[in-house]
Length: 145
Image (cartoon, rainbow, N blue to C red):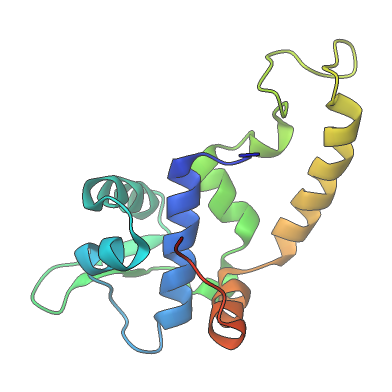
């Protein structure tokens, strides 16, 4: 079951990669990240441009340039990232994607999903990119297939 889009998946994986490896380097080469994460360079560039425009990342020119965090990963919650990548209404949407789904006109999974959605939202609001990056390092979680 896919709850987030490929855009969201690749963006989140890339941000976790950056959070896990930021002590090695302040700026990341997009082409290198695309190769290491097995993501299309052009697609990743588009994702990172959006996050730069939203004030989360900053791009740097030059031979040692690339992309880096503008906001420290300790201050970036998973909920913030999901909203930036998937839209502000991510935690309000119907699991089946049906417009108008709600208490008055629910879909078959509305009650089930509404409860889970609130639990997810609460967890996402307290989990930071720094937390996730640390787990990647300590527990050797993978970011690629």
